Amino acid sequence: MSSKVFFADMRAGSRENLFGKISRLMREAGLAERLAPGDLVAVKVHFGEKGNHTFVRPIFVRRVVDEIKGCGASPFLTDSSTLYPGERKEAVSALACAIENGFAFSVVGAPLIMSDGLRGQTAVAVRVDGEILSTVSIGSEIVEADALVVVSHFKCHELTGFGGTLKNLGMGCASRTGKMQQHSTVAPKVAQKFCNGCTACLKSCAHAAITIMEGKAHIDPAACVGCSRCITACLQKAINVQWNESSSLVMKKMAEYAKGAVAGKSGKCLYLNFITQVSPACDCYGHADAPIVNDIGICASSDPVALDQACADLVNNARGNLDTALSSGFEPGGDKFRGVHPEIDWEVQLEHGEKIGLGTRAYELVKI
Image (tube, rainbow, N blue to C red; front, side, top):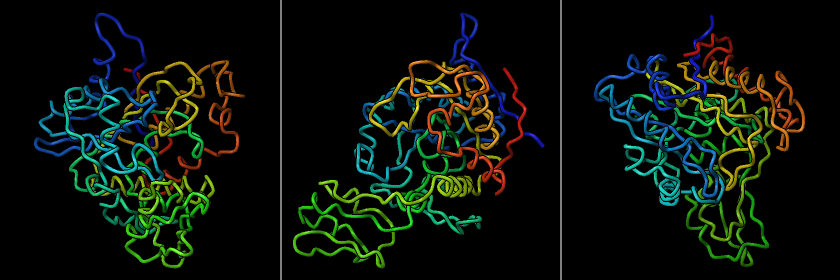
C-alpha cells in the first residue's frame, strides 16, 4: 500500500505566494487531524552552522509555527547538540548560533529549546528492538513532546548520500551518546600533539575512563561508554570521534534511531522536506557549495520513508546543474547523489526504514 506525499512547486504569484503554499500543504497533509488543543509540539529543525546558508529559512519555519498555533497547539523549535566540536557543541553556543542565523522568537514566533539539554546528555533510552539496536538514546524533549513536526532541508550528504527527514529524525533527535552509537563502535581518540594536559576532559568524564600520563590525556577504551562529553570539553580540539562505521551500517542505525524518535507518537507526526538549495553536503558545515539542481519545491507527508523516497526521485528526475560538485547524472533520471558521492549506497536508509516498519517506499505524489 502506498503513502500520500503532497507536493508544492516553487511557482508563486499574486493569488498565492510560497507562504500560502506551505499553509495549504500542511492542511492537505492532515496537520489538524494530528494535533489536539494544548499539545506541546516539537518542531524539529536544523539551526544551521555559522557560515552556512542553505538551512530552511526561519521565515518559512514561522509559517509552520503559525499553522500549528492555528490548531490550538503550542509549538517550540528544537535541535540537538553536535557530536563534534563547533558552534553547536552544547546548548549555549547552539542557541546563540540559531539566533544569529535568524531563529529568534521575533522571527519564528516560538521558543527555542534544545532537545538534549545543556551538554547533549539529557536523553531517554527508547526501546526499538531493531535489527541492530535494541534501544536508542533520544533527546528528552523529543520524547516528552506530545507531537512532532519535522522540517528538513533535503540535500546531498557525504555519509548517507542524501539527508532528509530520516536523517533529521535519526541523527537530529539523538543525544550525543546516540550520535556516537551511530557513528562509531570505539572510544574517541586523543591527538597527542594537540593535548596540553589541561585535565578538562578528565573532569568531564563520569566513568573514570581518562587519565593524564606524562602530561597527556589517555582514554581507556574498556572504561569508555561513548558519551563523548570529553570531545566538547577539550578546548584544544585534541579529542575526536573515530569514524569507523561503514556508511551502510550508519544508515541502518540511523533508521532505527528515527523509529525511536517517533515512538509513542502514532498519528501525531508530520514531516516536511524543502527541496531547495540542494547542496552537495550537510548543513553542518560552515559553508554551502552551489546547488546541484534548481529549486524543486516542498513536500509533506505523514510517512517519512515515502517522503524521502519521493524527494530523492524528484531530485534525480531534475536536470543537474553544470559547474557544481555534480560529476555525473546530469540528465533527468540520472543519479544525482552518486554523482556527488559515488561510493554511497543511499538507498540503504530507505530500504531499512521500510524493513523495520517506519514507512513504505511506495508513494502517490499529490500535487497541490
